[in-house]
Length: 237
Image 1 (tube, helix red, strand yellow):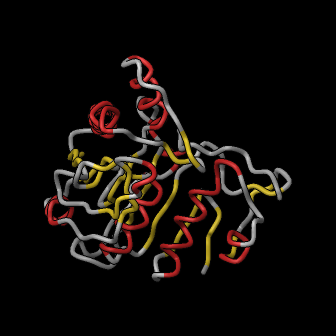
Image 2 (tube, rainbow, N blue to C red; image 1 turned 45 degrees about the vertical axis):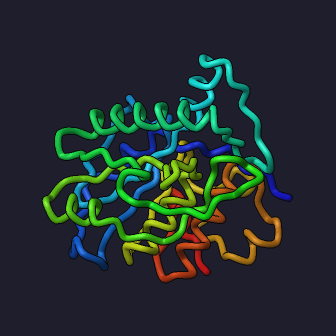
């Protein structure tokens, strides 16, 4: 196993700059996944992009404040009936902060409110594996020249991994490109940024640590024809 620097999604958003979408109804859409840690940092201008955010740090803090223990199975957060309300409130707060940081063109969209769906993972409680979707609210925001900022929740509500949701949304929208922003320049091997990672390298255990969920999500998108990038690294099917 080759160790990877843990990548939680951070201030790399500043390097994105302005991007344009050729067709707000389909091809040409850029999906950008940022971590909850990006909130409050310097952000570049997001133009005609769909932003999906995480919020693990904020969720952990909110659960601790509520006296609810954070439990993980296989790296995924167990979300009880009690915890889901706290999780949702934390993600709504992150969404508002990120919209404020991006600017007046940002439109906050909460996944369970716009019809995002997921298959429930029963052993994890109120957690779901997202399925590809094409929410009208996202299309309407793009058509209006706004920047949809999506919180990772599905109907239920269910807590959803933000990397997985970004990939499912990119596939459902028929996006041209998905970009996972991290706090390092890209996927690392021996402290060097890789230009490219192939799917079989992800599936045969070449990588581990915090980068793995992003790589797995990127493979899902790449296999459906979406150009997938983690920082400067391209992930190919």
